[in-house]
Length: 371
Image (cartoon, rainbow, N blue to C red; front, top):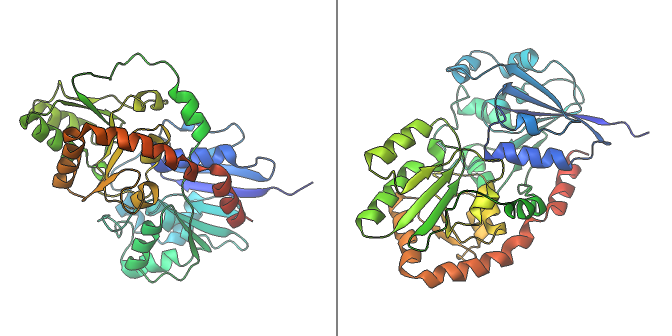
């Protein structure tokens, strides 16, 4: 009988974000006969907790998130934090999110435990890179304690190398996208009619936080409306910025134009109805939401973030990548509104891109690093 390897995936929480969804997809594809899998969160929160596979053990440290945790954690060394938080012994410990999770797992000094750090962001635009660290030197030490660094995009890895001198082995492994499930769920009936013969329907999916750039996207819709364009914007997601976003909608008198529709376990049945998928993020790692839009054959416009050229092509072959600014978004969306044939063009082109999301190759790379 093959001895199972004990693997720990350590993450902040299991809220409805991209990294958490990627983890769920990974867990559903790992061989439960080969791996004894544990997921541990810092905070016992998130809609994905209930969706964990039954064979995955789940643990948490705190019942809910509290302010100041990151700053308090800096008062202790990574070794002390690891001793407090991680009680069991594992063959592999995976910090599945950058920041404080990476710092804590770096403190593992148990003999024979392999440490892996998973990078889901682009530090080019991330002003909080040093937030969980005492200084840049500590950040460099932390990352170089890992036996393996995994980045979800080439540009994301490049930005880490630009921040620190990286000695640990590093490679790029794209996010696992469950193509079959996305296509199947997209066919489910939905009772929200978002199609419109008189308006172009813009759609966005993602956690409601600053990084996603919804503040500037709403400004763009306001400017489009003032310029006489007929558009509607539907945003699917939950998050800490929900109240401020709703306030902005009301302040700019866009209640009949912009709609916050919360988190949905199956957003795909709505995404397929979008005329144009918009990613307004200030920074990304490798956007699962953009990948899902491509799979569903929806034209995409996105700001220039990490991973976008890997998804949509170096020269906008499969979608439109614009300058990472409010003006870039505004002018890019206007291109589609002024030339409706561009929507049809990219609707056809994205269908050619689906093949890059085959999960088989990705799982082989992941199992190789778990070997």
